[in-house]
Length: 144
Image (cartoon, rainbow, N blue to C red; front, side, top):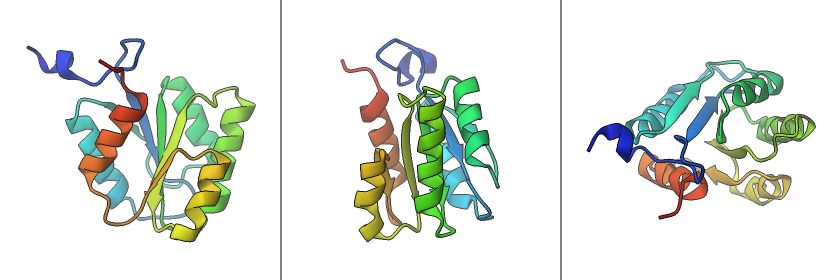
């Protein structure tokens, strides 16, 4: 069996596509790159946008790339503003079906508010790459 056959798929049969983004002025992207690599190693198609992306750029990339998921890495403390802006831009573009998750230095007290905004999952420091990969596959993958 080829590795393409084993790649996680959406319910429609397409490969799962994830955009990993670093919004705002945060210049530390090691964690985002580690997550991107783990997702790729699991057979998920990943687009990494690089540093200093605006919410508009992130949403535009996700739409152009036909992404199923956006993963945001935020270490700057601007997580409430940045997640809200991405979700608002998705809604404005009628693309709220794109699942948004994130991670970084996000206080646990802020997680319920982010979830109320529509963030599907927040991974805090110490989360394993396996748990992130499993969550993405479970959240948007086809069921057997």
